[in-house]
Amino acid sequence: MRQSLESRNMTRVQPNHEYDDFQKVLAALWGSVASPVFHSLGLEKSNTQPTLWWCPTGPFTFLPIHAAGIYNAGEPQCVSDYVVSSYTPTFTTLLSNVPISDSFKMMVVIEPNTPGQSWLPYTIDELQRIESHVPEKDLIKFKSANVEEVFFHLPTTSIAHFACHGKQHPENPLESALMLHDGPLKVSQIMQQPTPNAQLAFLGACQTAMGDKDLPDEVIHLASTLLFAGFRGVIATMWSISDEDGPKVADAFYEYLYRKEPSAVAGTFQPDTREAA
Image (tube, rainbow, N blue to C red; front, side, top):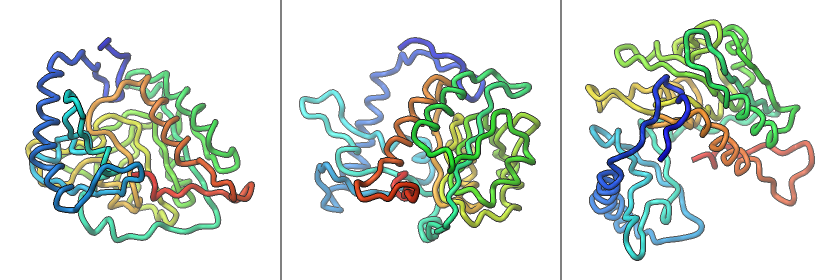
């Protein structure tokens, strides 16, 4: 595996020399966790997989249960053959309804050159990929945004997409932030602003769904705090991603989310964010 460009937490993704060990971890997760669960639920391989919400605790919060499987066998077995995986920090977050609004807006915030942070040139490509799928009338776009601008548009935003650096604050989760051009947009600020239309947040920053190793049972990562702030769903990363991979992920995701049914009336289509698992 070649070394990537700058990743979105100011580190470099190094070549993985422990690939065999990683496969062993995935196989152990399959045999000890995923396969027994599927057997108990009576799930089988399917082309129309149901969504399954994992609610891990303790050390399991650091493990990719969604990728569990045996990949080097004659007949590979993996979680994605059986279910579409998603995670929830608490069962309460599953009970909230997706807000319904006549006004659908998607706010996209990219930060290619945040002061004091490493350069993220591929965020520009990420915005272009999003523009190829999302109607212009539905977009609110910011390049090098300031906190006040983003804060102002949150109440009317249904989907918020951030391609930027992120900062987690394990001791005080409300101080966790997305790094914008003029400073951090803190979770505590987001929680102060009413977000009646908030359906989905897409965090294209590194380790936004990674908890604190010293407090594995505490739900303190940036993604979960945005759920508590009012967003119905959050897409985030458990580990580092390279900047050049951001556009690829966004392109595949929004291509799927914005696929239209043949009966959709022009100009009235809104994506179903419940399919963002």
